[in-house]
Length: 577
Ligand SMILES: O=c1[nH]cnc2c1ncn2[C@@H]1O[C@H](CO)[C@@H](O)[C@H]1O
Image (cartoon, rainbow, N blue to C red; front, side, top):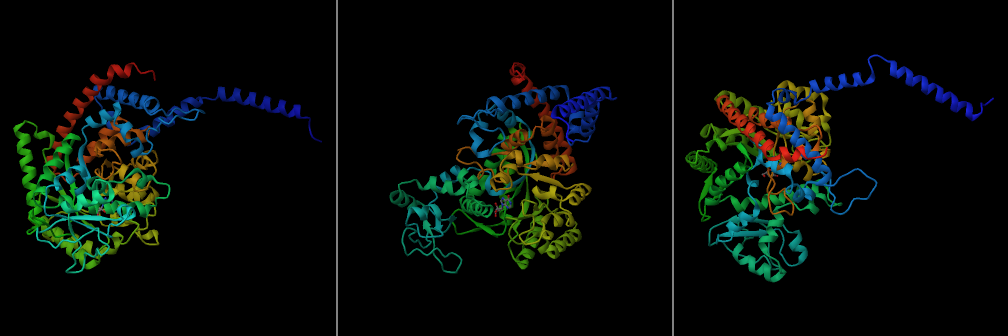
C-alpha cells in the first residue's frame, strides 16, 4: 500500500540531513581533495615551467594583464551573463575576430599584445605581409601593369563574380578590352591575349560602374566578414574565395624593384609587430618573376639574392641606429609547393628546392606542401618522391626539414574519402620538424604521443582557422587542448593582409597573441612567454643564434613586463575585480 506523500517528504529530508552530517565529518574534507586535484593538474600544465621561473616583475605583470582582460571582457565588450537581451553595442570578448577587430584595437589588452616581444614568426606566406592598399598604390604608376579577368566585365554581376589577376609585362603586349562582350579570358593556350593595361582599365571601370577600380580589387584580395561568416558560406566556398585573393596579390608584388622594396617593408612591419626573426613561405612553382620592364626574368636564385641583399641593407641601417637586436637574424625561406600537382612536377620541385639550398645554404630552411587539405593530394601520395628527397639531402649532407601544412581540416582525410589519408600520419612518418595548423591532431590520441616523442611543434594560425571555417571563433579553437596535451606550439598570422575584414589596418602576430589570450581563461602572461620562447627553440636558427636570440628576447620580455607594471599597475589596482 502506498505511503502518504508527507511520509516520503519526511524520509527524504531525514536522509539528506544525515548525508550532510556525514559529508561534514569526512576526513579530509572535500575542499582539500579538490585543492589536491587542482594542484595535481597544474603541476603537469604546459606553462608550469614558465610560471616557475617567472621573475617578480613578470608575476606582477601577469596579475595586471589578467585583471585588464577580465575587466575588458565585461566592461569593454559588455558580455555580462544576464537575462537581459544585450544592446547592439555588446560584443563577446573572443567572439568573431572580424566583428570584433575595431573593438580589439581600442583596448588596453591590445596595446599590451602589441608591445609583447613575439620572438620568431614561423608561419607566414610570403605574399601576404603588406596591405593591398600599398601594393595598389605602387601599381598606379606602373605603365606596364596589366590585368586579366575570368569573364568579360559587362554587368554588376560580373563585377561581383569575376576573378582578376595582375602581371607586369612588356609595354608592347597586345591589349584587349575587358569590357567587350567579345573578351576571351583564355590565358593558358599559347598565343592567348587576355590582358588590358591597368591604367586604361581604371577610368573605364569607374565610368561604367561608378566605383573606384582600386577599391574594387582591394576587396577582391581581402576576405570580407560576409564572405567569412555569411550564413550560406561553405568551407569550399571560402577556400575558393581565399585562393582568388592570393592569386590577385601575386602579380602586384612579384616584379622587379617592387619585390626588392617588399623585403625591407616586410621587415619594418615585423619590427613594428615586435617580431625579431621570420621564416617566410614563398610558393616557388613559377620559376621566375618578371623584371620591372616585363622583358627580363628573375629566377629563384635572383630572387634569393635580392632577398639577402635587402635583408643586409636593412640590417646595416639597424646597426647604424644601434637597433640590430630588433631583427638580428634576417629571414629564412621555406620552399612551398602546391599539393595539387602531378608526381612528375613534384620531383622537379623537390630538386629545385635542393638546388636552391646548395646555392643558399643559410637561407633555405625547410620544405612545405600547401593548399586546401580537403582536396587532393594528401602528403602520402608523394611518399616516394619525399623519401627520395630525404635520401638525397643525406647524401649531400644538407638538412631541409619538412614543415608541412597538416591537420588544417575538419574532415582530416587528405582530400579523399578515407581518414587513412590524413596528412598527420605522413607528417609523423616523414619526420616533420614542425607542422602548420595541426588543428585535427586532437582527434588522434596515438599521433599525439608520436608528435611528443618526435618533438614536433605546431604552428598555430588562429585567425586563419576561424576565417577558413575550422571554428567559429577563438573560443572554439583547439589550441588550449593542443597545449594541454603537451604539444609545443607557436603563434602565427598565416596571411595577415587577407585576414583583416573591412578594417583598413592589416592583421598581425599581435592580433594572434591577443586572440590566444582572450580565447581561453587558461592563457596568461606566462603562457605568452612560453609560446614566444618555443618560437625561437623550434625555429631553424643555429644553436648559437638561438642562444643569442633567447638572450635578447629575455631582456626585451623583462623590459616589457616592467613597462606593463609602470603603465598599467595603478590602473589595474583601481579595478574592482
Ligand atoms: O593556410 C593555408 N593553408 C594551406 N595553404 C595556404 C594557406 N595559406 C596560403 N596557402 C597557400 O599558399 C600559397 C601562397 O600563398 C597559395 O596557393 C595559398 O593557397
